[in-house]
Length: 336
Image 1 (spheres, rainbow, N blue to C red):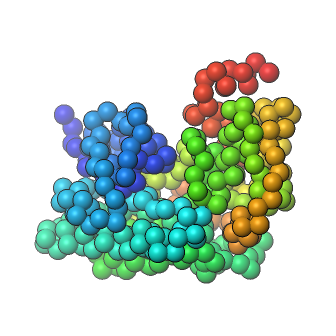
Image 2: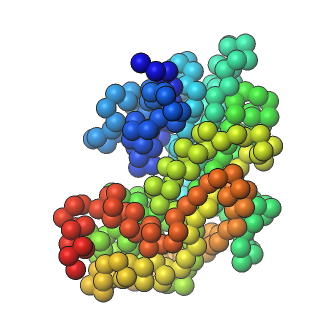
Image 3: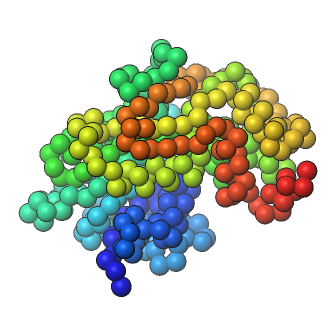
């Protein structure tokens, strides 16, 4: 048996966490090693990777975190958060889960570092968000554009980025925060994220169901597929962080497109009958939230460091069909 590489995924029951866990089970981060996976979340879907240890726990509870960290995983992925719409609607819960729980996590890592005499210094990959930015925006956001969030969710993610950078500066851990584009097309059922409709207007029609479009078709946004997200995470886990200096947060590459361009890509892949299942139904609350989000990026730092994303939105749709659409639905599309 080769070397065992212990990996902890906090938020490992979610969609991205599960996809990452399966990818790591198939292909470890480090060639010649075997991934020993520990997943922590409130619950887990059927079909988690065989052999992965599951810890059912609330990320806000420090005790299970300390127990998992006592095994000193070499790499820790931290996804656990409540989503944007819920964080905006429930102020107390948003700050408790998205900010204070992350503080307790960082402090638990620091205590393990101190207990080891300074030898334990894990790579921590934190999933941040483009919600850390607020308008007014330039046409294209470059790497020098400062965070100024306009939502509670964005403020919570920005605060976590600062904490991660400080703990890294002190040498307690080796952290990197990746500002994910909106992940689309998300498989499964809709969640409470304000951005959920970006996936819904593709996913539901491809599955023969109607989808509500709560914003205008001129809305532009920044997207990446789940497959790209897994690639980002794997790359971040093995990246040399020295070139980052103290700027530990990265804007990641993605696809900038309008809702109309999303719909036209869907039409090109699946036809007019599928597109007809999208039903406009304006929602002022969603419109207001989305209006405060960035639309396009020039992520030169991330590109120079080797991060890569989807070529265009059609590629994102095709990735969903290939990886997540039910076989009978995918076959129907192939036969059209």
